[in-house]
Length: 186
Image (cartoon, rainbow, N blue to C red; front, top):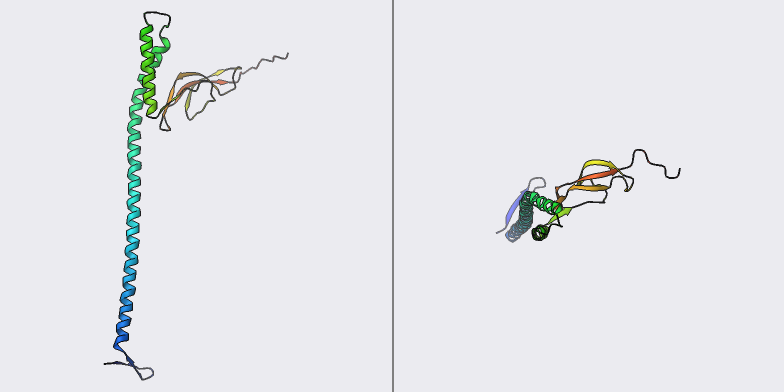
């Protein structure tokens, strides 16, 4: 049975075939289903990307937490390293009674330094290097005509870095140009 509609403007009667109405309805449903599929694909891609981002953030946070814990532990070990350095520096190597103790200290120091180096601790011993305010802390300035100005002439205390991050700056004495340079040509 054909449906009839009247157009009031022109007073003409148009018949709509039920099959055409059904096809139009199916086209509308297909378009709606395609849009829903597209929306679901977009949502799935967003969820996948968010999952990857969350995984990356978690890995970064875990790495930071591990480095921070290692940084605190390494910082607590610095006085031990300093004590070993001083014990070796001030021991009398000519005293035969102390030689075995000194050798034991040196071996302990080497093993200790190798272990902390393996875990990312880097010694900053800038003797003779240019002063770097990002890694060194100037304790004093001393006039010197033997080395260029702003050169580290003495290391009071070694500095340390861990995983590329400054743990403790090196305490240093820095050269400066003499106030009254001597004229050697006169």
